[in-house]
Image (cartoon, rainbow, N blue to C red; front, side, top):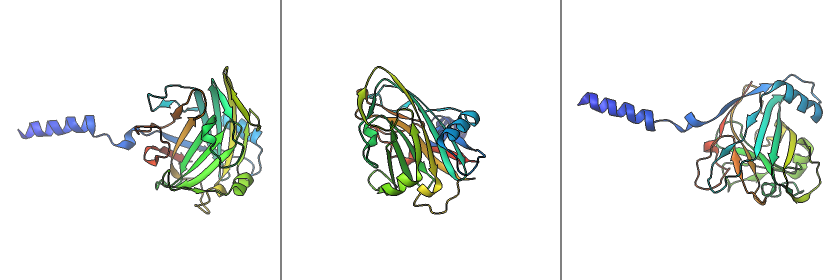
Length: 240
């Protein structure tokens, strides 16, 4: 009888005992050597040459099945996070031009970043013409916006679609965006060093007001309805 109990426990643990972290993605963020003052064109080139493409392709909610092709690259250099997104989607929309406006309603890419893995995170959001939205806090309802002046001063970004707003365009579109996020923009983590950091993160693609509404993620989000503000579903970033 004791053997049966042990066997049952082993079977139960194998099937049901996987922890939440067993399903989480993990990514090593490569450190790239570069000069301190570098333009976005050079950042883009170095990312292309030295990093691997990652995919944002998880459909978490059956009600929103549309799957545009979305990939990204990430690295760090001189205490900056470098990102480049590649998007191929049917419809594009860029109505918002004001910093910290609701850019997720447009064609939008997002990087949610919990530097210390303690549950509080920054939500970096950019519509397809680069309008940024940035806040910090532990959940959707407790957010502290980073000042627009600081965002404009510190964040560098460039979209292949330019920076002028437009109504929705259909027919299929490809666009890219290169982004540089200096550690100074992590305003609640003064003096933080990226090198050697073990962090938590998720990468997203969405478009609330587009004709084909969608909510894609890099790491799966296990909620009943769309909700990106869930740090318990973030994957792991390991900075070289």
